[in-house]
Image 1: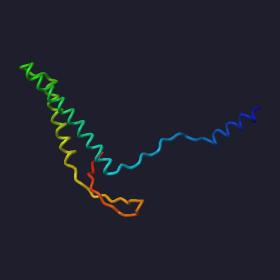
Image 2: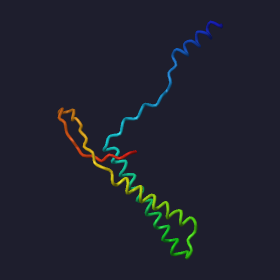
Image 3: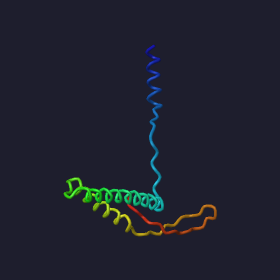
Length: 113
């Protein structure tokens, strides 16, 4: 019986197969651009929310709370981040059309992720 357990332990250790996640595909410039546009849209939503809340606080309370000033600071940071994201430089990218084997070039915008 000990021979069976030794044999089964050997087979388990020699056949160890780990489940690993595959490496993600590298992002193309156009994918980065699409993701950056989505980020810009989300930032616009956040900015509008900040502005609405701050306007409501100004009209309802004569003296602003500490939360108001922290939101004002967060709004400024979000506006700066949006400006930085919106001023990315365009890059030229080449790709091969495999159906015709012709090289085409397109202009996409590169964004750091």
